[in-house]
Length: 204
Ligand SMILES: [Zn+2]
Image 1 (cartoon, rainbow, N blue to C red):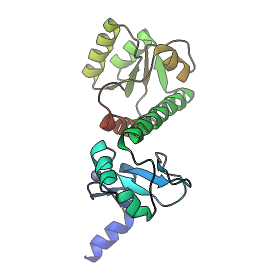
Image 2 (image 1 turned 120 degrees about the vertical axis):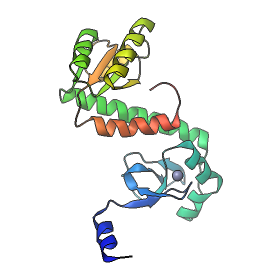
Image 3 (image 1 turned 135 degrees about the vertical axis):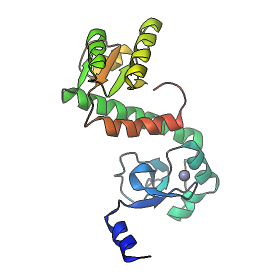
Image 4 (image 1 turned 90 degrees about the vertical axis):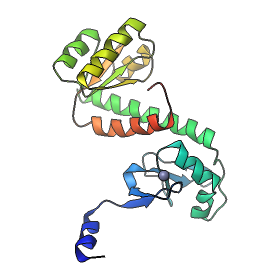
């Protein structure tokens, strides 16, 4: 390795290997898992649980392969319980959904969310939306209207939960649509959405 390569690596972000495909990626682009004190394999989406971490690309293929080849047990050098792809997938889905909801609430508290049909329609036209949330129980007609609007504006659309839930998350009454302004909150939300979409087809 040349000196230049070495100094370039010094400044780069920490890398970890996926236990499934073996590829080396930036730590933040991988899912971290730890072994809980009771020996249960635990997804650590925040990346701050204590103990040694083991990593997988955020997709079911790599996670499944890592489990099948017993690479978590090999990494922790301990027996691993709860390494079941189906239940882990369900757990990750729940955790990711909670994190997306948390970011939406934070964005609302920071005054970066506008909601309701008229405000969202106006905001989308004015290029003020970075991400659009629609309620799962929105009428078919409205769903089509906002889906077309989002596609036209090049804004990612997310069906997160029902109107009561969407409203509550942003401190309002029932809401069918809510948009997050471009900037600060969009990047971490997109990361969670990418994990979610990798693991699950369909809604959200
Ligand atoms: Zn992988």
